[in-house]
Structure formats: structure tokens, C-alpha cells
Amino acid sequence: MKTMRRLSVHKNHYLFAAIVWTLGIAVLCLISFRELPSIAIGGADKYVHFILHFGYTLLWFLYFNQKNPIVKKALLKAMLSSVGYGILIEIAQGLFTATRKADIYDVFANSSGTIGGAVVILTYFYYFKKR
Image (cartoon, rainbow, N blue to C red):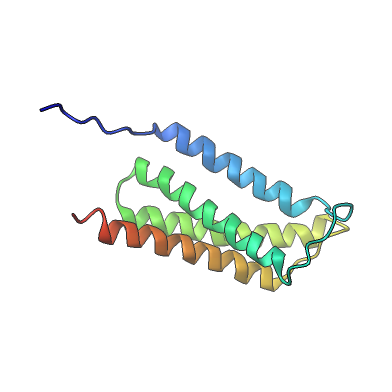
């Protein structure tokens, strides 16, 4: 019987992916999209905020969990950093851009994405890692 080797990603790969995602959020949230065609879906930017922070939470969790494999601590770090980063980006939009404004509903969408990511992580560990 062959020994199955688990493929593991080195923690620096997780860190790189998380940093790229984080910088991508900053770019997307701080540049102007006025010259692009608008999307006719009501509240489309809230879905984007949800997805961005969902991904942020997953990627930073993967990095923190590799560093210290205590799921609750890694998840708490990822969630707090996601919410904090979302708030900082909204403040930056209000202070440093002429075409964007701070929006409390974006913070709610960011936080919803963070919670969604946490639910997926906790569901995975509860149902699949127990077995």
C-alpha cells in the first residue's frame, strides 16, 4: 500500500496570496471607476465588498492557521483584521479620495463577508476535520 503524501502549501505562499488580496482590496476601493460602464444590479458594490472580505478572511486564516494551528485564534485574528481593514479603507475613502465616500453600509457588507468566511471555515473544521 502506497503512502499517500499530502500536498501542503508553504506558509509563505499563503502570506503572499493574503498580501496580494489585501493590496487588491485597497486598489479597488481607492481608485475611481467613473469611466467604466455601470452595472445595473442594485447594490452590486455591496456584493463586491462581501466577496472581497470573504476572500480576505479565508486567505489570512490560512496564513495564521499555518503559523499557529489553533483554529479559534487564527480565525479571530483573520476576522478582526478584516473588519479593522474594512473600516480603515472606508476612512481612507472619505479622507483621501475625491470620487469615493465613506459608507457605513460598505462596512456592514465587509463585516458580512467576514462572517460568511468564518462560517465556511468553522463548517469545514466541524464537518470535515472531525472525521
